[in-house]
Amino acid sequence: MKQLHHLLLYVVFVVSCSNHNQFISNSGTIVKNAMVSSAHPLASATGLGIMKNGGNAIDAAIATHFALTVVYPQAGNIGGGGFAVIRMNDGTINSLDFREKAPALAHRDMYLSAEGQLNDLQSTHGHMASGVPGSVDGMFTLHQKYGTLPMSELIDPSIEMARRGYVLTPLAAELLNTKQEEFQTYNRWSTPYHSDQNWQAGDTITQPDLAQTLEHIQSNGRDGFYEGIVADQIVAEIKSGNGLISLADLKNYQSVWRKPITGNYRGHQIISMAPPSSGGIALIQLLRGTEGYPIADWGHNSFKTIHLMAELERRVYADRATYLGDPDFIDVPIDKLLDSVYNQKRYIDISFDKATPSVLVSSGKISPSESPETTHISVVDANGNAVAITTTLNSSFGNKVMVKGAGFFLNNEMDDFSSKPGSPNQFGLIGGEANAIAPHKRMLSSMTPTIVTYKDKLKMVVGTPGGSTIITSVYQTLLNVIDHAMGMQEAVNAKRVHHQWYPDEIRVETDALNENVQNDLEKLGHRLRITDKIGRMDCILVLPDGRLEGGADPRGDNTAIGY
Ligand code: GLY
Image (cartoon, rainbow, N blue to C red; front, side):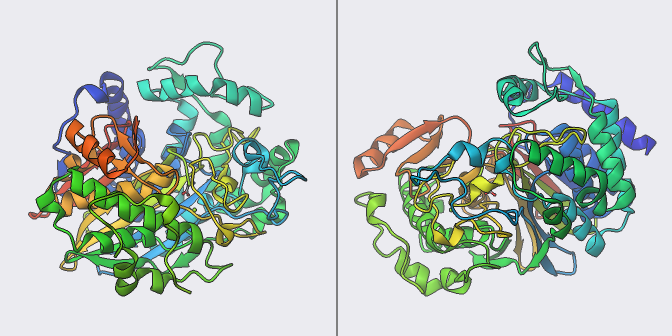
């Protein structure tokens, strides 16, 4: 444990001295044995410390997850949920759904007025926006099946960081300063994240309430969160703002093991998340549509490559809106959506002479977003076990409500349902009946934790936040490595674009496309919208010689470290 303290202190020093955006390198950290990539250097260091102490990839991912709750509160969480995709070194694969659920008292029209008007503030802000959190159950369920070190050792570093405090990076201070008004509006008390003056890089935040909550979890297991004092605190908080989560909702929450979605792309096997995430299905549909075209010859972010991606994306997101939802409630036609003949037919009307207006695109004939403030963890251990976990509060700091006395933010995941089928959610995503609200149902997600193998050997562990852009960010990162021959960091640094059917536009990161490409796309009928940042990837690539290259996104404080 002493070693871990030294490592954390070193990382604090490095972070306070570095300015990420000044030194963007195309070469990632390269190590021989094991690696963690996550949204925060202290969280990555925590996971690495666990592996150095003998833990495996799953132990490290769990410890990293709890650490993100402390040092990356905009998305790291115990008040949210997520998905994990696992590949052990014997080739077995698995995935865990610890997505939030609608409370028992939720109902289809809960965000509609008597006149049928959507009150989207209620599904995004404040107590009514929260689904029943799944993260703590998820971590214990993962640990029970795959963990090797005692759970208490995996939570210890986070308790310590919450108690001693952590140092704000420039990006973290800047983000907190934009949220002060919302924190004040939605909280009855002064949380550790309130400040009358602007937060500065280098300021330290201590979280004694959160430390105590983590200790309850450490002492009592999952029941330390879903029953007893913490559950009482959650329900008291929820009731104070007319939310719906009850003690019974908490007690009854259960994660679900799901069969991963798998498919092939140019000789690679893709292993990703099944519904209630749309990520795996949409990713495989996009790759199936891409496989027939020589995009390596066309070039990265060239006119033809971008046109093809946008045309595929608008069709795949139309399918997502119609067919995808919680498989425990609706019959999701997984096999049909992944069928190669279906996908061939689906894309047959793509023309290279003109863009297809989205209004002419509906779902294919066979029998919904998320916020930039989700977060992802990729881990590979020295034995080649790999795990990809994407987890979220939905929006940045979720519903902005910190549970009084317990010190953590609650999610606003209810907005990922189609509150009014046909109306867009906060990400502009349109959803249908398949994703309508129902008691105990899980809301559709875009999270796409993904593992790639080649010739039966681990090749990549990939994932990102970014709401509706998660799927297309993962898609582009795979294409960057597989088609455009980029290394991991280069593939992550590369500028991204995104289309999601509606709104009918290609979102383009600043400087992603040169002027000629932009003009050519506009001539075909595409509308372009320049945007700041898309995604914050955390990835690991196994190099041909077996070493690991990290791809930590320079768009955030993301950090890949290993040994
Ligand atoms: N909350 C975003 C998603 O799950 O897609």
